Length: 263
Ligand code: GLP
Image (spheres, rainbow, N blue to C red):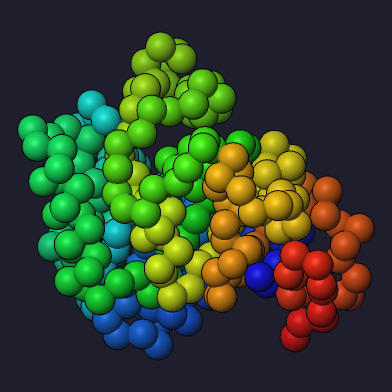
């Protein structure tokens, strides 16, 4: 696991965009797994600016979003589909047929799940998966619990997740109680993972992700056993692990019991 400490949210977004820009330029076609929430907004802004300046081409990029709220249509401003078009897709030259977001409204649950899984397989798997993290360690909408799922599935959201995400809704009661999410298994199949964390509310989950016991009650801890994970976290999100950081350039390799200077 490689942990990169950014000075603040803007710095985190810039550092993340540099990685994505290099992958978008170098890997053709690129299968990009995407996340929502407040954390990657700055990253999308950077990428849109880069595109507007003529430095990026999304012609050969395919995207696969992590999740969606059950019951919300793409026209609902709180849906993740709406979010993605608002912050990213409307501003770049991505082909509509290359965008994949699990639907929040559907008739046949199993078909939706099978189709989403199949679309990822047909594309050849995800090259780079961008992740945020919930304060309880959830990834996508893979909530803490007795077990984790491999594939796309429907989940009941935890009360703490509903509370945390209610800031985007008029009130807490409007937050859907269920979501559809890519499973931890599929996320772990991505060739490369970039996890972003910003703000002190994420500090505990981030510390557990990096040095906690790998367990289903904190889904992000499973990332420890992925061979190619980069975490870009701002100072606030990383303050609980700051004592473990000794590299002067703020860039380290971090494994559960061992640290090495990086770069
Ligand atoms: C939601 C999303 C996650 C995201 C998390 C954190 O629950 N399903 O993918 O990582 O929120 O969001 P934020 O970045 O707003 O803190």
